[in-house]
Length: 311
Image 1 (cartoon, rainbow, N blue to C red):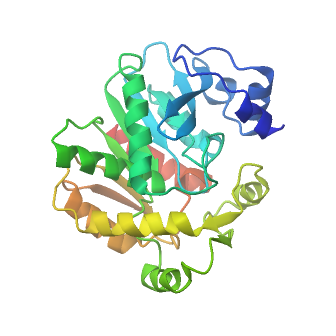
Image 2: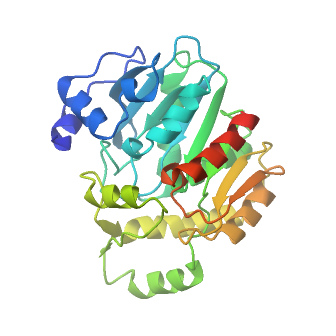
């Protein structure tokens, strides 16, 4: 499988579930995100949507009679190919799904694993929502993992600030990012080195208890191998923005958080989100780490059963 060839030959997304090309089928099969692996009634289309400064690779999974649509937002260093368990869960609950690779990730364009400012994530999402109007069944909901949660929060906060209606009715935040783990130390290191280097080597951490997933992630041909300082600077600015935000988002999110997460500062982050949102419902997963969409089966079953009750 040559992912660069798949990326270079994407067609515009039509939302009509056009069949995948042979190369696209090979790509989807490699990550087990093709329709046959997820749900026996789903149709899968892979294509792009042109957004400001980026060409965004999108996956549309359409059901014949869906309850609505979930927009799926992956985390930093991730891409849609790593989210087969969440895709299966949402489809089995009766929702169509629109999932896309963030700028600089997966099959999307952009500087690898970087962003000039988190507002660019919001601009991309706004364009995708506009393109989805009249094409994706409502109501619309959102499911985010880590940085994906930051994008959801940024979008909803911006809507409150500009007095626009919220695009989502229900929101699921999985291991949400506000601050990374040990961020006070990390921020000092950032300020000490930000003018001297442009990127650091990526450190693959044990962010899941599933050893098979950790091994797969290290060999993933779409896995970035660097940590751009530009992205960390953008995150630093966003942390300050969200922690100082005065508006309250009139929505109650479902938050799922592992107790052994060493990627984000869970205690601090949930306190901030409890101030930003209206009475979040929180499920703590004992022993779970950060990458909850790819945790061990018993952990996934626990939080998916809980989410299924609420959805």
